[in-house]
Image 1 (cartoon, rainbow, N blue to C red):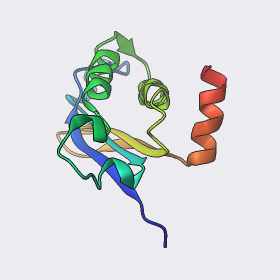
Image 2: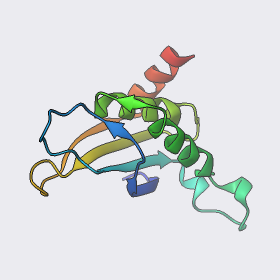
Image 3: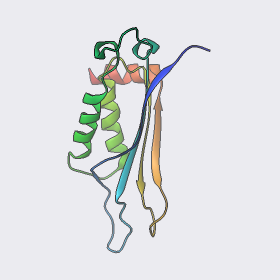
Length: 131
């Protein structure tokens, strides 16, 4: 098995508005993001404790915050798409998995979400369309 490395962001609460709800409907008050970014092992197995030897994910997290707060979304899928497109702009990211979920779904319970995995080929194809 080949070596793999990833960066994991789990349960990031996004400040966003998603969906349109009828009067009296349960309105989710939490939107949670999980993001796994597969990168080269060379960006984790480093010889010196220097930022220029690792993938600096802080700008990406700031961009995710900006996208989440960028107005009202009808669907979780659109926000997830925009986050994936932001990730695609980083050549260090080889593949990724994203999940976005909201809670509660009904009467203070339940989690409903979407999940997407893009392999190397799919991410390369996306990069081509974004160029």
